[in-house]
Length: 112
Image 1 (cartoon, rainbow, N blue to C red):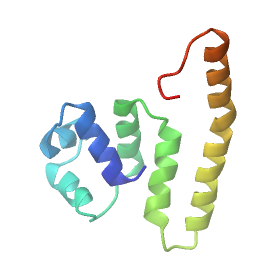
Image 2 (spheres, rainbow, N blue to C red):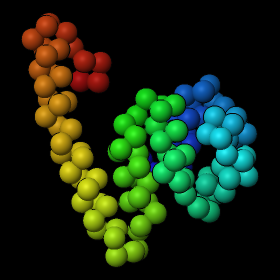
Image 3 (cartoon, helix red, strand yellow):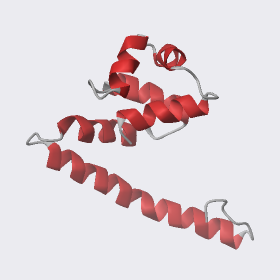
């Protein structure tokens, strides 16, 4: 999830909040959020962690995604991209186990 997607999710999770309100939630200036929305810069790791906390997301995954976004075109991009893939692959057994648990309990996950 990149910077713009995180901002969109924060707005939606807060009832269509303004960019000013999103900036308050993240502890940054509203001009910073405006620049991010217009592709002028990226969230820092610290702000990404705050966004993850507000959205109930895994902060490790968010930080890796932000690094992937920031490193595009740099020599380290492929390393961050590979790390992101490994995180996704590591999560698959947990998701499969959760779905299996729900099925064994006679429940259905709402996303399935």
